[in-house]
Length: 255
Image (tube, rainbow, N blue to C red; front, side, top):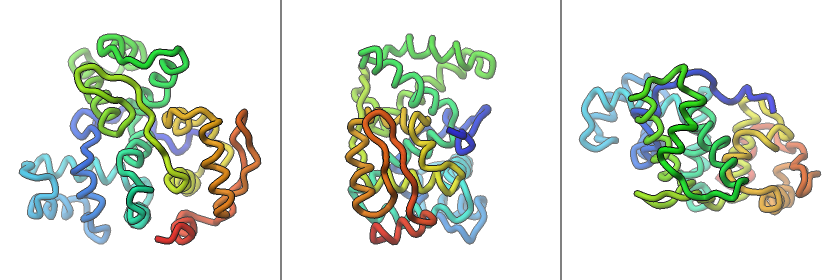
């Protein structure tokens, strides 16, 4: 796995933006790629994309969402097209994907900490234990107060994206992923420089919280629909893309 698709280093959006699904949906639907981020922030305030958010919050959320959903110029139009599939393109799963790409703190929680607990047969989420583990990884970049806020927002974002269930007492969940959603994520990674065979054991693979035997039918469906050639099995997911780019994939799925 090259890792080139995944942002490294400190990133401050998590503390202020978290998952924010309803606001994210408005951003995706209404953001004008022909205008600047600042101009879109003004449109967000005027159009109440984020409810009664202040001008400062509108600026912050618009900037954070642009960073999350536009990893390369023009990508938002592809995401918009894909979301026309409705139930096959659930925003929580897609939001999870983009947060894994862009937020190293969320990625650690989703692709390292949660899978390790599942492998140990533990599905409950002790908040204090979670923060203690986060301190071992991030204490050199996050102070105590900031650490507590980030940990709280990581858990909230994981719950909102569907990978935790419960409010006061949380446990690990693993929402369904359609073959179309998997295809969109893989072809997005292709656009960002990752090959097909870099998916197995990648941060995305681990963060989906699905064993290989449950992923194989999705890859087989994608092969039937001629999105890729699948040569893997329950011990290794491998194959090759048959389409040139993400837009070709979107055409194949009918959007």
